[in-house]
Image (cartoon, rainbow, N blue to C red; front, top):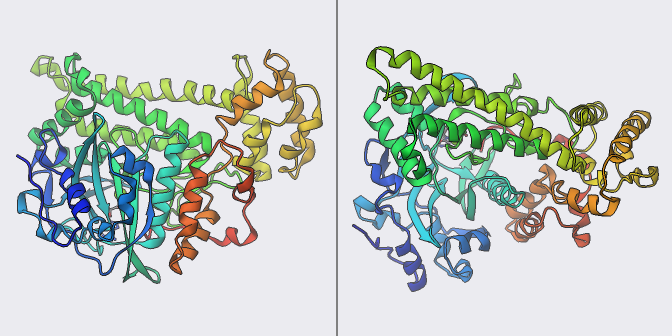
Length: 518
Ligand code: AMP
Ligand code: MG
């Protein structure tokens, strides 16, 4: 069954686009039904305008990029036409639970995100979600809104992460409205249209486990397997194999985050994607000065989600997922021994995290150091670099980027990295060891530099860059949002015209604070 929701007031081309988005397709999450979601219209936003638009994400969806100029584009993607949709096709908020800061939080759910359906293009099916679309039955004390500031950050960062090669939800656009939203201060409302193959979180599984709904748990797991890992249907234990995929993709994601100095900030189990995507950008941060204990979320007093903790926390979160899936494991065993064997199996699969993460991070560190071969002591070389970076609060991105300028022959190219360290002697000691190691490599300086520049980005979404774009956007000048997005679309390129986006943060940046409030 398929609907073309009536979208009164939309232009013809926006109506046509709206008609391609639907939640009625067989196999879509929304078709799982009322146990999993509540359908309701978005709360309209007055006089919405376009703040940011990713032509690339549009192309992914098969949308003509000129659609952003359509005068009714912002109306649609602010959810303003959804009140006219038939009840079976309305947007939907999904229910999930989760562990927040290590503590079971019970039911949470999409408190401000509304699925509007999915689009199939080029053999890919992608779901669309309006984040900030108004209150839902899962909003608890929240207002269902997102503010312009955090919406711009999510838009910029999710697109930037994608271009760094890091699995993530994408963003199609940000629309804004002058409607006031109360946070620590009064801000204004915005909606990010997020795009992903699936928004299923660890917390979705935990929810049905904690409510003793094994039937629903199975439907959910079957949905994910059918859509994303159909080959697992033939596995000895498909649900255990699904846990294995989550272990794999989550371990891989942690390698990516650690390797660029990205901190998520709120790694609660409800913010963990079953597909290993970076999801729910809130108080995230890319480190400027390296601090292994860096806490990007001002509200995280204990440092639970500090940079160096992230892989461990991911592992902990996977245990929660495993517990949620537990009733489905071991169907092939005799009833009498099933419980015990299922737990053993799950533990074995979870062990796979360490087996995958550690060697993958070591491999990535060798790439970042420009080492083609594997030698004893490589791990120590990388760790001692992190140690002096930490002691000197050396800039994460610039340190790695500038390493490519060092020569294996002499210190002639050391200055761009060396100057980032107050303790020059400590750097020189490390550099001597690095050069000794480089001498074991056959590659010349130039080709090593090319390879290193492909893994060590020059441009990341530093806090102060986002802040500058946000300050201008608050004055209704959205040009910096798009300019910054364009720079971050080519993070590994030199871009000499954009040198200002690759420099150390200005002094005022150190006073920026990012909290959970978004
Ligand atoms: P987070 O940890 O920020 O991803 O959010 C945790 C929970 O709070 C999720 O269920 C969100 O949907 C919900 N939430 C966060 N902010 C709001 C808001 N302004 N209004 C309603 N629900 C919210
Ligand atoms: Mg969340």
